[in-house]
Image 1 (spheres, rainbow, N blue to C red):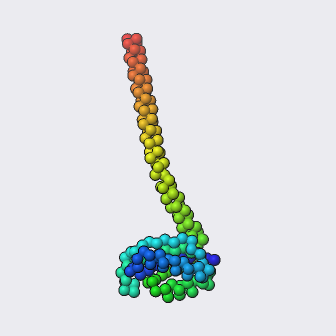
Image 2 (image 1 turned 60 degrees about the vertical axis):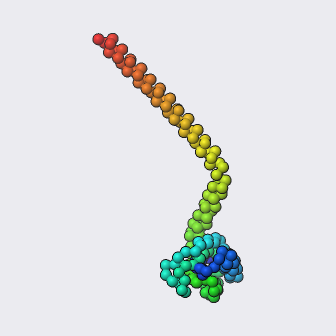
Image 3 (image 1 turned 90 degrees about the horizontal axis):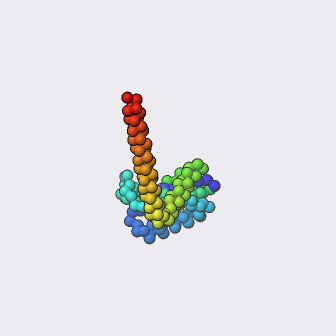
Length: 166
């Protein structure tokens, strides 16, 4: 099986429920041709660069999927016959491309989980960081005072040596 990316534009007059139904039907179409969806992105309603079948807007769907090579023309024919799709594009992806996409998806999922989990930890970490920075500032201040004292003592020592030399 090869990896593919399908970019579909659905009619703009659909509501969210109809878009979800369309996604389910498109998923069924891909499964019908022995494919499997790896990742599905709903980009939402966007303005088209030019009119497509008398439409200025459309719902964009980006689908990463697998499919048998011989079934791609039949899949494209199904896209063409499905009345809610106004434009489609199917691109074959190399293995490295799909790995990159899946890695980005995994990173995004980890980041989302970290954000959800980290909101409470973030406050604790921020408090700890503030405490660490205050401690570091206190340490630096103490070291600075020690250097000043040492410099002052050295200066006094130099003065005493000058006095003795006279």
